[in-house]
Image 1 (cartoon, rainbow, N blue to C red):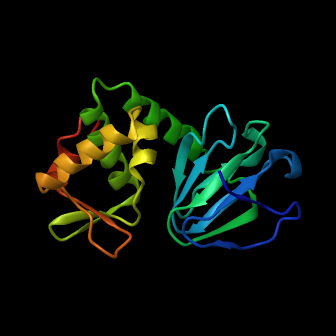
Image 2: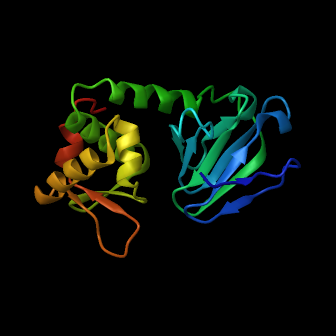
Length: 197
């Protein structure tokens, strides 16, 4: 796992290219401080060896991560798209929405579905509903996840994820345009998900 450390003295805004990660160490942040995503999409994950980079949330513009609620090891923020965030934001108490807790709950719900195919469909539906948009006949995610990462999220192996994704491609339910960092998803796949919103 490769990441850089976020400097102890906060500065704004932090800009990160796609694929880069930073470690946010809660011991170096002030009480009730948080980071706030200004632009882009990020994955938040645990840096601990025991959890092997377990994903706990995805964040988009306006979402906050309250740093004093993190585990003692901290968390890493990975840029899934070009990312801009503030590392010195104040907690917005009026919103009373904890993006990390909400994502963790939704990811746990997915992990408890009956089979890997249901879990993959529910994961894709969740990501598209939260982070994607409708573009004509397709829905679009502005990023892709590796088959290994998808396996981690749905509680399966990379091989199983690859097999299931190949089935969805063959059925024309997902499309991975060459040379573009997006994933196209057929609306019917989202609408028929077990956990459809």
